[in-house]
Image (cartoon, rainbow, N blue to C red; front, side):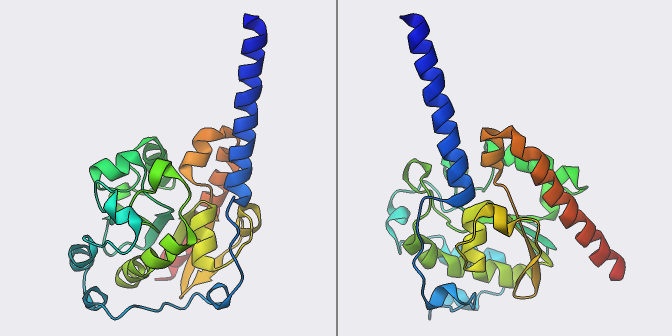
Length: 238
């Protein structure tokens, strides 16, 4: 009987990993078509924080946000961290449990892997800027809802506007789909150089997905090599 239970548990775990991989690649939320999917134009609300002239000011004026239900369940508003004049911004989807507790993005296991990825292309965490679309943790680390991203994305757009990066690296399908206003799969978006208001945008796997499926580490490294080549070319042309 114990052998049957062991085989059943293995089957359940294998099936679970498969569906999580499919979610990472193709998603489990259907985004409806509409005007907002046809443009990535930034539309700011008429609020005081829009006039912020620095990331520090923006954080102080937005950290008390309670526009959606996530603001009532968070431990910390997870704004972003790094060089305010960075040439590269890494953008994920939302804070997890560790990030919610510490108030800083990518500090858990996925964050440790992201640090190694950044170091592998000859950079340090302190040189780049790191943030998420959402500034508050969704319950049980579920995917961000479109309404939540719609509410929170003006803060992200203002962060990008203030940093003025040359490159944006979207970590995972969700952040890439949202910034590019597309429903394309991760597979379709990868290996291409997209444009986001003049910045070169590159899509790769979320570090958490790489922890779930180490086989994706090699293609993720190919994505980063493509970025590094473009980065070095940009730097040489300065």
